[in-house]
Length: 261
Image (cartoon, rainbow, N blue to C red; front, side, top):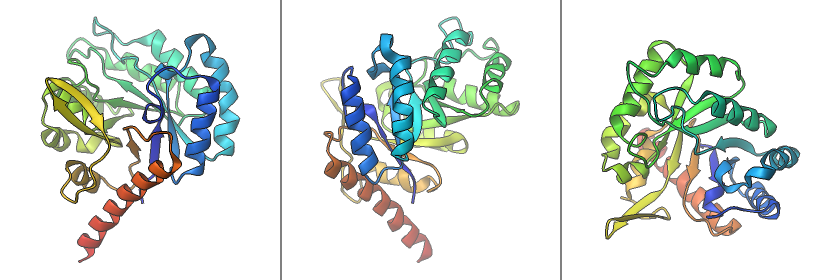
């Protein structure tokens, strides 16, 4: 069965204290989840390094693998690599021994953005894999710039993979099924959520449990070796967390059963 990760923003919607963070790690550590996604935007900037260094042994003791996520784009508004910011993020990720760093694309401009400069940064941090996510912005949530980035990066073997968020495509009116066909070779981390629209406002809700629910197809198409994240409110509840972990893993078993039959 796939490893399941719990993002901090599934437990908290605003900035959190160290006490909140320790509570989150405790709940996730007691759950059936394999790991936790530490969200930089939820931590207090002035105390960030201290917080990360202090939780590292706690994460290790809880046997939780870690994704470090930050709303820091790979490419800045001029199409240049966000060099200093990326160096900072990778150094922060080392404090918690994160396996992966998840970032949005930003303003990638084909024929202008220098992929070699990104590669040089990645070479300086060989123990961490960069995962670029389709976010909710115009520059990073549309198929075309993301496809251009991944295709060009793959041509020169830059070690970068994708976080495929099945719900974020809705924010830019993109077809998630079409996106999946294009990005399948690059996907390394799957964010599961369900997005609804009401009065031109998008909001995220829990995964529907119906057997024909939208998310189930994506989950079944993705190999079990690829970790999943449950990115919707889990109410800081161990019971709620385990409930949805079981639902996702049962969905994979159901697909495997069909394949055997």
